[in-house]
Length: 355
Image 1 (cartoon, helix red, strand yellow):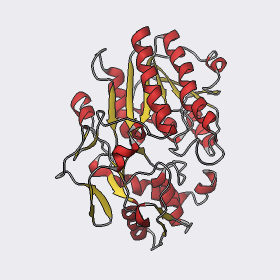
Image 2 (cartoon, one colour):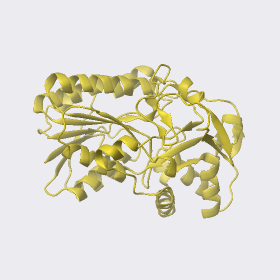
Image 3 (cartoon, one colour):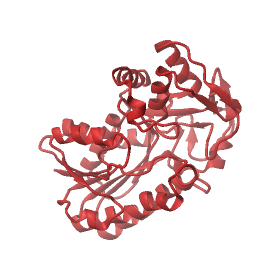
Image 4 (cartoon, one colour):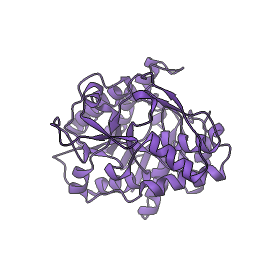
């Protein structure tokens, strides 16, 4: 089998390539990346040693797809993954749309040409921010918890947020690019006869991630805590009680592998996937874990709200479990421990990540 991974030199793309090579005999992997992300060059060298054929190119340029060999499947792991992209910093709204939406047309045309299946990595942030912000929550120690004794809207349960939860705007500029990409990908697959699977991923995390305060928060927090960098609890009374779930790309890889092997051509094509309730924690809980692992380091409190922030979001894996027998194997403690071990071995990792 031949597999093309866009954004292959990022944390997710490179991790998926490595895991896929371990899972499949006789697999050939091609990778496309513009090496724009700080630190990505280190992954290029590692992947080439594994036999991955690397192509330096930009998914925004249709001509950069012309040298690529035909593939049986494409994993689209290329995107600006920050929910604040387009509204904060030096990445403009036009650049965001070009990176995360317009570029998908080039990927879909490649799939159309070669009849390649598409595995589109979408995001938990396609969901309505007002709907998420209005979920009934209660405090459980130093973390928000869903109050499932209260009436809940469609698409959310004690297992987390599922596919049927509201995607009504606003969802952020970032979320809207991913939601639009989902719709276009499904239409292309139906019109031109190639399979499309869409996975709305929760927070992907692990050792070697180029974490920042806006994206890759678990990796960033552990590295910054160890180096005694300033940390802040932003919004929600500045107490760090907001909650997300996390999972490793190697667990995602198992699901993508199962989807590539699936024979069905109709039915459900969109799945929510993440760490689930068992792999969820608040920032305050994460900081307490770091305090125990390293030594106490107190974050600053900044109660001012930040654009697009939400208090609680956990992904419901039940559909993926029923359809593919998939479950998360890497516990949150294992995941955090691997990040901490990597941070200890790489004292300049924040600088490598461009911070």
